[in-house]
Image (tube, rainbow, N blue to C red; front, side, top):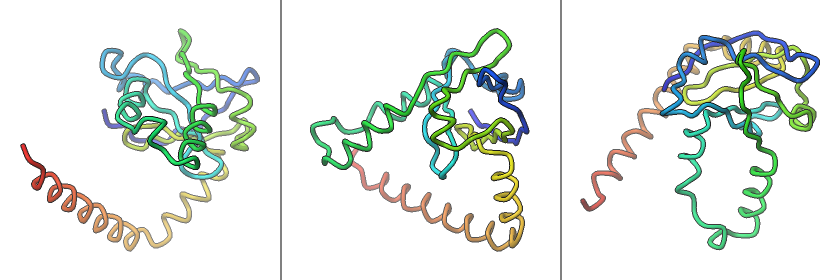
Length: 165
């Protein structure tokens, strides 16, 4: 699954977000599940939405709770408590919990952006500011990012080559 694009949307008075058809058609119930998990985003004031089965696969191989430091366990507790499984209705709308919207500071006018394996929900004005910032100096930022990603891929390949079969 590969997700891309930006969608300017509104959250309705019941806190429902309509997931665009362009995104829904990329998701496969057998591979990805029917629902989406919403969790606090990597960036402040955002929420991340992951296809149900994909998110569960990301979390299944994490260490057991007893192996974690108190700080890491507290983070795990926080992340799980601030997450919700969103089951879309017949029109592809998901109900975003009010408490998550408030905590993230997300209003009614939003940008839903696709970021490879997940979606991010932003205040529209915040995303527009981010977009403007990224366009300024885009060629240099792209070059730096591509170099970093190449380096990480090379390190991962080298680490995998060293693993016994």
